[in-house]
Image (cartoon, rainbow, N blue to C red; front, side, top):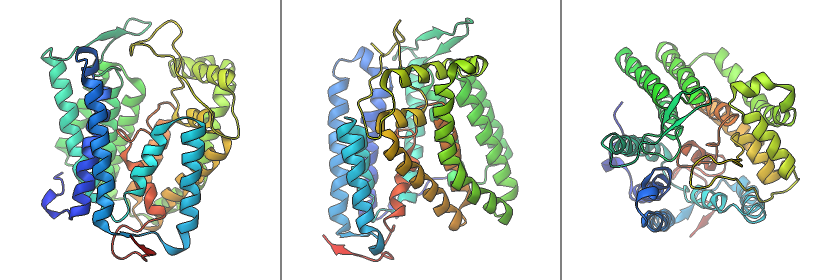
Length: 387
């Protein structure tokens, strides 16, 4: 379970990695309760984000060449332009513009080494936030579900953040094909149970249990089966589009499924409200949540499902393109016989049915690999242009 040594990372990749970590510190400060007790935190977040992005862009000058595949250059820039124009400018979501910039800057970067070291930094950071909440440096706010179950935010401004961060850390272990001993599996299962008892975040709890089962199966079978490869191949063709459809259908018909809505803690009704409030257009539109002071208020509104939010926020055309790209990315790893990575992407997609982390790069760093559909990772690429 050791990380890749930073000494083995080439200079452009190291620069990109440091930039990503600095940028993420700004993002992760925003997830914590620092804002509620330190007035300057917002300024620090912006400084970190700008400095981190500067390092990420500078890494491309160190690479010195573009590594796009020759037959995909035009398609790459058309898709980038559409996402920036539709998802960024029309929908007024600069987060998408930032993600597109970071994806472009993965050109010539060894993403495997970036991801390996990044997750250990993230584990240390989140552990530190939780520790500060336990020693009362950060507020450990308690909220209650309708039935009276307590939920501790553990130093974050929302109770589910710590549990979902843990879920993505388990996905990292699957992604890197780590051989986890039974002792570590027991520890991981215990921590998942502990997060559930403290945060009462049901979806993250069951997703993490599913990921732990995958870890166990990976240990026993190593995911080399030709039968599994066929299953994942057909799953890639079906699941992305199916999941988008399911998120839309059940939200549109939310009142026909009251029991399911109760199980999903009112997510279907909130999705229905979002469809009534904004509708779905062909192109992007502004999407506005109603959350004040980072706490639930009387007119609280948000669309929790990443997939439904994508449809509402960015429109049908962008949804079709993104779904096709997700399918292509899963197939990319299936064809490379990296079935563990295909499984991780499907689990990410499954979590996107109920929660908003699909395009949150501070959680779902795996989306960086979308660039590998258009760019080669190293000198082996067909270079198309010198910078």
